[in-house]
Amino acid sequence: PQLGDGRALLLGEVIDRHGRRRDIAFKGSGRTPFSRGGDGKAALAPMLREVLLGEAMQALGIPTTRALAVAATGEPVRRERPLPGAVLTRVAASHLRVGTFQYFAVRGELATLRRLLDHAIARHDPALAGVTDAGVRAFGLLRAVAERQAALLAQWMNVGFIHGVMNTDNMTISGETIDYGPCAFMEAYDPAAVFSSIDEGGRYAYGNQPAIARWNLARLAEALLPLVADGDDEAAVRAAVERATEVIDAFPALYREAWLRGQRNKLGLRSDDAADAALAEDWLALLQRQGADFTLAWRRLAEAAAGDEAPLRALLAEPQAADAWLARWRARCAADDATAGGGAQERAERLRRANPFVIPRNHLVEQALAAAQDDDDLAPFEQLLAALRRPFDETPALARYGQ
Image (cartoon, rainbow, N blue to C red; front, top):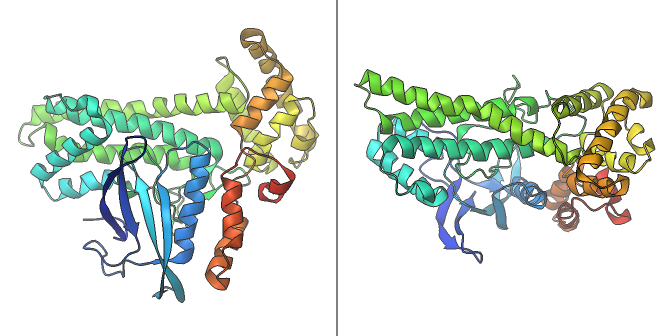
């Protein structure tokens, strides 16, 4: 019972310059016991994609695994056609996933599952290490993972990131983004947007991501239950299920709170108001109706805050459609200034720090990868990578990366 393609090979751990423990792993170095008949290898372009997307996330302040290096192997890998091969070296807080727990739980290897729980707690939640009660330990980890994932998913949603394949093997215990396969940053705002050719039913669509995260947490809870309650003790099992369900049912509120904090920041607000959720949701509905670019529409709020609404209205199919919402937003900004101080220019600067101009746009990523793979030309890749490391800068030199 396994997920994934079996291309990951954990090399070991190091302590980084900040004193944090880090995993170092290869991806694409060849067959592993989990390759399921595949060659375990990787093509150059997908590994370079991991660099671009991971470094973009890092620059945006979103927890992520990172690419330490991509090395060309000099041999072709056979896919739809022969492609140049490469190996990615990936760095992570750990490579523990929900699927790691599922693997041992499904096999009934409870002693190993218990060791895995101890290892995960020591690695990511050391405050639980001295706890002796099995339920407190297991559900404490579950709660901590839920909190980390709620924060991560809110950040994804607030920048328009679509992971594409949110299987349990791609959900980390650490709360870091992992596995940049068929993923993308959304352009025209659409909650139903999908970026995986195999996701024909839209299971991993942009708008479904928080619900899938909750589903994955439920699978983690199922894997932990045997460590808490003996299956022959029905009362103990019921009690354990109730405790796990409380954590799972609390996830939507955790996510919603984190999402709304991010929305307030992106709207330039420092105070809280009960109507802020409706203001944010109506803004997103406006973007959807108007087919507006998600990233640029948020970015152009800075000009609107400073008094120039033209750049924002130019993104809309019907420029006047923003009238009512902009009036509400300006009234809310005035109330925010009365509470927290500041003014229009200060808000505009905050908005520029909160809303990126440069994201890894699909056409630019594909152009850079095609040049590297087909022409052995890394210049477009290196130029795009440099731009992605400055996501909040809007300069003439970066103008084309924001289009």
